[in-house]
Length: 347
Ligand code: 5GP
Image 1 (cartoon, rainbow, N blue to C red):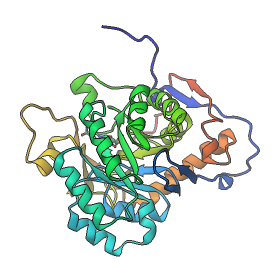
Image 2: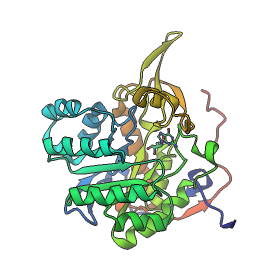
Image 3: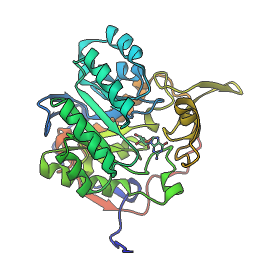
Image 4: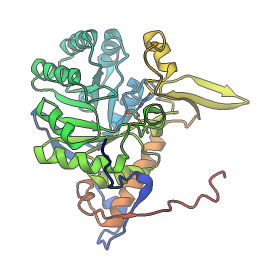
């Protein structure tokens, strides 16, 4: 046994220190980024915020709306080949820049991935997603996927440490998804004691990835637009959101009405609800590692998007970053023991 005594930090442990700035207004801030990838020759331009590949968030409806604003959606892996055919038949050409097809690492997953990409070779992004990106099987699957699709942009995760980021990049990934345990409907830290505070995970993994020419996605733990700004400030190239995009018209999950109030169901992809829905129940050898919650219906996602983008532009203005690209360079985090004033949080 060994103990690392460095204190690792989450979003709640820091704030961004304001800096002198020549920017007059947040309207002068550009949130678009342009990326070239380590393996794929695809170039990408957009606002690097992503809807999570959860069946309540990474829906086709979400993708259609987010793409209009140049935001990205990792489409969840439970759509059938037919669902994909129907969606892509009526989607605009630009959609291919703003969606990834997600896959697990089983034999049938690989078959389905090949089937969908053969039918729609314009798909550019593949997201290989497992709860624990440290397994050898995962690395083997990643290598096999890279061999099969030499020019697709491959997203792989999730991990939280630099050495594994490097291994996945060398095995063929372009973008590494970072986050174990910070998610809003995740119970991994409770069930297993395993995890890594998200801000430190981003800082350490971004450093490892950027050293090799790779990119990272900060996945999970953002509860406010301020957290999204902190994730970018820490070095994330993309920020992935689950809970913040759940509960909208475009989100999946049942719409419920309780005492005249509307709610939408939201659940983790390893929750009992998800396992009952997709794999016929929770297998005996495993525990559910996700929550099922009811969230007040939030209406159309476009309003939430404006709120997040407005907050992020404002963060950039506070530190004098005229482009999102400059935010990390201009960020100084201060360690804090307070966040917002919560006296009116129930209003
Ligand atoms: P959020 O933005 O809601 O805080 O986090 C979203 C992320 O939580 C997802 O992208 C995914 O990585 C993670 N997640 C989703 N469902 C589950 C689950 O059931 N268990 C765990 N451990 N993580 C989950």
